[in-house]
Image 1 (cartoon, helix red, strand yellow):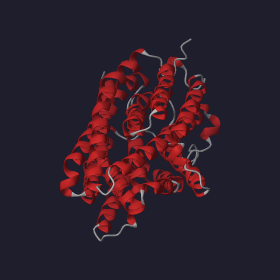
Image 2: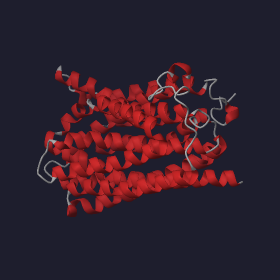
Image 3: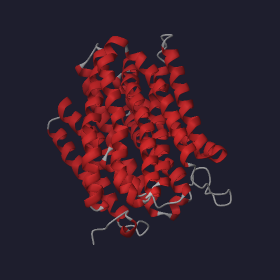
Image 4: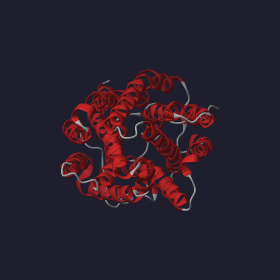
Length: 413
């Protein structure tokens, strides 16, 4: 019982850290997007996103090196405070009137949030049993999601009065309590056992992808799902720019309300639906459900593309990505080793997540340069990637590496 209570405490405390981090992210998410679009235009969002794979690969490689030097606790502290410092520096440069910092800010907000969130999950996955993970993963996403709901609502309430640039400053401030809580959690509950240099698979543990088919399936699913996220986002931002031409603060406020409403709605999925599904439905069927939902939503957007239908498809993608899909995906990491949970996971859930967006952006930019009006094909690309995602679920849930008996993948007989 004491061990189980300790597992619950770790999950709750790291969820609290994620709450502060996600609250801050809502301030920077809407602000950085609007600042970039006003500086360079919505049509150049794919261009800046095309740089994401390089930025994220360099960042993940640096993370792997720091992890080898400092261990997981101090690595999380350094990356948390370092992220706050970079965001603060961007805010100060914005105050000079410079627009050239907006691509840096846009790219950094895409990277730092997944880097920190995945480290919280790495520690949770290292500290709980598979059975506990099924019970707590939904509520963990829910507690973290409260931060996103609060942050998005505050952006909606304050962006017009305080200004878009001030939202960036608030994002940096929110990382300070997140760093303190996560470091305190490590100090109380200790660090997971770190492999020796002889046992380690390297800074990025890339060799593990040859050994474990679960990791290959996971990164393939993450890549395809994030292409969906990218094209839905590009289409949504294009439609919003047309709707709010010449009214940047109003658009920032609208986006704040959009994300606030999304994060508030997600709480129902995180606290109620995800725990119920994780308790009573085989993991296989949960993973199959995700792409099917997106196929339906994108189909409706294709039939009648407007702010409402595209926004709904994007809304549903983010809602399930933040809740049910996240909870089901994290269970797969629990029985794995340190390098899978701390190194391969960062490759999958940081590099993979952002490369899915960035890699698709490279292709979009090249086709745009060739004269193809890619905005006409965003929804079709999203539909195709949802079909691919559905196909990729089958090898993931049939892998012998994740037997149902360990609480990971029930093949349903």
